[in-house]
Length: 159
Length: 440
Image 1 (spheres, chains in turn purple, blue):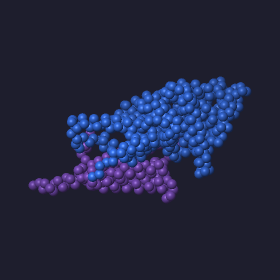
Image 2: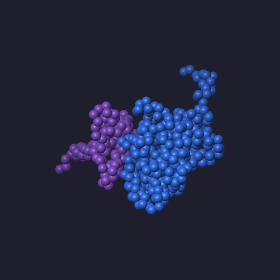
Image 3: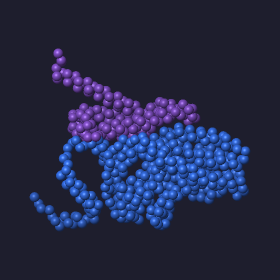
Image 4: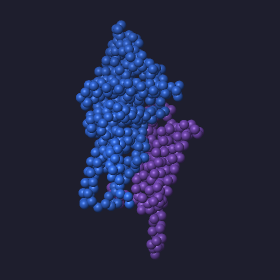
């Protein structure tokens, strides 16, 4: 697939702001997860995995590295967004599989799964991706609406 | 403008540390020719920047490449461990159900052979089919996407800095599946010294045969972080392979270094048919091993456990298995391994899967459940040391045969076995000593 077919926006200033926000969000949640797993702050349900926190920080660093090229309209910065999304989706998909198989064990009433609680499997890697996709979807819809409205204003109201 | 001082330049060029590798000059020349041809036939433009290049910009990034590789590896082992647990339980329950019938066979000797020997041994090892199949599925997906060859490229930068050959990482990656395949793949490595180094360190990469041991021990002793512990074992394998390779290159195998020239294919979306086919082709070998060598091994192990100098049905402590284990037990006392574990490790020379198979049979004949027995006989630190020992000592007899075939030398084969045993013992001992300072 060639660059033209990717339909990347020519002005990437807003994308850099969005990427910065996503990066900071992942970084903050990752840091909280590490602190919580090390019990340096009050332990939070679903935040018990130290490695999970480290992984979120790596995802954050991918997003944050893309901020600089995007802020100067260098379209190669979109590559960082793409890989950030892929990594976030990988961790999300993995957690979905974990929930499904644990749910299967619970349904079959296996001994090790009797005390299983879905809330323990709702980890930050899961809900952060949901937040990420919701935010991205909303921005895309708003962007489209904005373009349509601006287009109507530029062309003038039809008689 | 001052003209360059030729004599100074010449002396600088002759500095040994500044010597330019002929391979690099060759690669430069090759790319210069490619560049000249491209200038004539290709018009550069932004439109030629494709999605695959875009992903490579990040996945092969100088600083992000390695962390992304680690995330991918962690995801692979987390997937392998967490997803397979419920399927393993299904197989366990299935064999337990069959065991309720076989234990009622009227001939006690036959009942014990089938229940404790065959079901306790081969049946137990078959419970590890799901994680092994999931591991192969994950490796197949990574291979089919084209990422695995990039992983070699990412690691090349670090390996070259340490004086190693970048291409060596490809056989090492194959070692995640099977050590024999990794040793055979070392044929692709340039230079005799590099090839020999790759052959010698390939067995340190954690093959699929070791996975059941990690899953069992991590699940029993570190249940909340089991996936991460398994991941750590695989990473330790890579780190040890690099450290040992550096030592070899700086001591007994000093020789040429060469640059890696590698064509990277474009990324592909893997097909379900292709990935599952690769998984099946590789995974079925494990089932064949379980149905042949491990079946014979489990019968031999049962005989050694059920018989002793006093005859049939002796207490497990007086069996031939106990005598064999106790013979070598004093060596392993500093590591905290019981004679049962030592017996398992001896059988592990045949195939790594035989370690836990032997443990399962010894404890089953002794009338104790494996998990209960392990908790009673090993401390968490000794259990971790056991995983490290299993990671680093000789993978299996087939690997020893492959080393002999590929090196064509009994001397190097003997050296390979000896250094791995010594390394496994020293590192496991360090785990016990250093871990003892922090966790006991």
